[in-house]
Length: 232
Image (cartoon, rainbow, N blue to C red):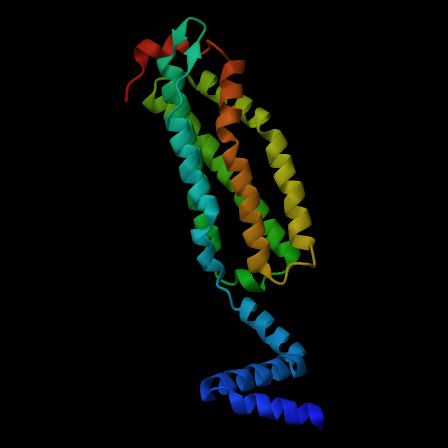
């Protein structure tokens, strides 16, 4: 009783607004504690309504832009100096690679019903998208080198094969990580799974400049013979 009298006396000395504010906080605290499970479930339900289509604004697409800027700033040499064809070839191929990745994942994220597909089905869909874009890029790269830059088909295929061989480690790592992500029960929904998958794609994109440099250094001098035939 004495404590109630003290509390009542304290309220009496407060301003009306302060008294109202404290009462509101007390009520909110009570409601939060009393209906903690219901509130938690409501928050989860809100998360489940996130639109997978909004992932087209994912930071992965910004990473792609940054990779292009890094590649545009690179110059390549072969033995005795600047190699024009190697530099132009690299920039053309990486722009093509990045654009293919951006386009295919943008299309994928706007497919109907992604939020409802099962984990195994999602894994298959993402893996198929990855395989399709790699094949699409390789075909376009060979065509660009041959038709736009005058490079023999044999040499064009050789370069594409060597690059894919060098990048095989990152593709294998992505497939392994994809399997883990889609089967992980800690994710609430496919939005969260795809969000994480795109971060994984982002990592693979960010190391493209390094891999390209290593690939071109490995085939040093092979394409210099095309310098006199290259054109924009």
